[in-house]
Image (cartoon, rainbow, N blue to C red):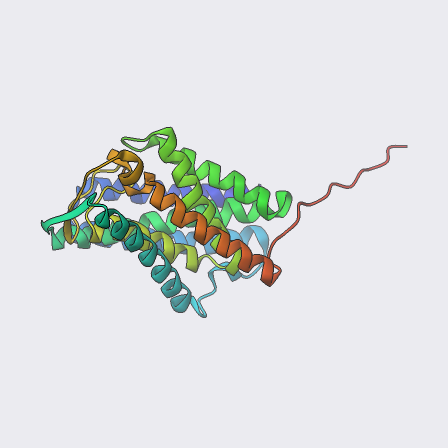
Length: 272
């Protein structure tokens, strides 16, 4: 029941925030404000429901060291997406048509903050963390990565390949980041930086969703396998390759730190 209660609290906050942000219709001050408010309320709601259902301190969201952990995540996410764009640019499949919109980039900042925080709390904070206690690290990682990918089939221009790509490069990578660090700040930073670089800086599609222009007016052309097509660079083989490399690095780190959990064995009960 703790999984259900925790999931319900974060989902309700996420849905309410999403409805309000959509109603703002990309109004820059409102979208920024509502995005930050949704992220903050989701963090507070998660901390409250975990304390209430598990009777413990919420170590995975410890405020001490949070800024540094978010910073590390931001750096990893930004470097990863920049590497993907540079590869596409070198092949002539990405170019900058000009400057985009500063107001659009600011609005996307709030939108991305809300999405990154709520999704990490749901998929890594609730699902992965609790399922890991039963199925072990590898089982929970595989299951939640698959669910994360499937959830993106609801997005515009979604394809089965796009869902598989998201499962590998995001679901697997962000889950591995949580397992290796045992905090949610690093995956939150990575998730935010990747998505914001995608739309807010380089001006490309974010998981197929329509969004205002970012700082640059980016144009993708070329094979869909490389550019991701209408779904955006997240469906690019470059993104999948980058995600796999970082996932393997985090799994190695988790193993080195002794952070990997084995599946819980069921004990048989004798019936007289």
